[in-house]
Image 1: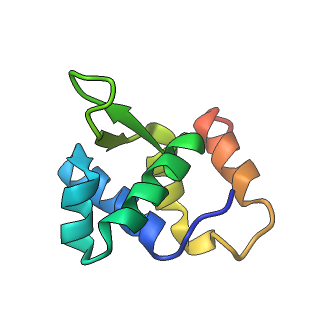
Image 2: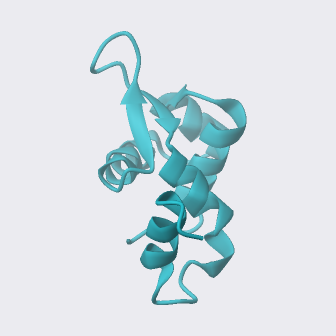
Length: 96
């Protein structure tokens, strides 16, 4: 699992704290380029950490998933252990 620190964790944190949001709003909150946020959200989605939601399929509205919350809970260990993905998978499966 390849994450961009700190941006990906900041995105997850905002979505966890504030609920659903768009790339445009996330860019404003984080004071980051919207184009960059637009590249991070599909990546986070491909990892199962966020999902696109909304009334329209292409609405651009995202929310954090349960897996995203678990990753956020373990962000201090990201990059410090080679078993990070196994730790996340085990907790997601309820094996801890």
